[in-house]
Image 1 (cartoon, one colour):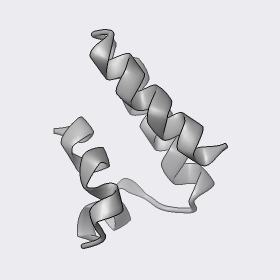
Image 2 (image 1 turned 180 degrees about the vertical axis):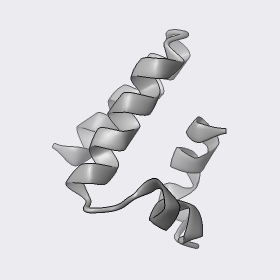
Image 3 (image 1 turned 90 degrees about the vertical axis):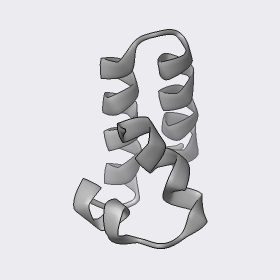
Length: 55
């Protein structure tokens, strides 16, 4: 379920809907019990795409 939210974030961004992309990404992190600050401080490559979406 969580990864679906991350995929939705990418799809929203490609569709030119950055607000919806951010919301989907935040939902994904919430399902993973992570905050934006925690994700930003992690060095794991699996979250690098999430950081790019936020930029």
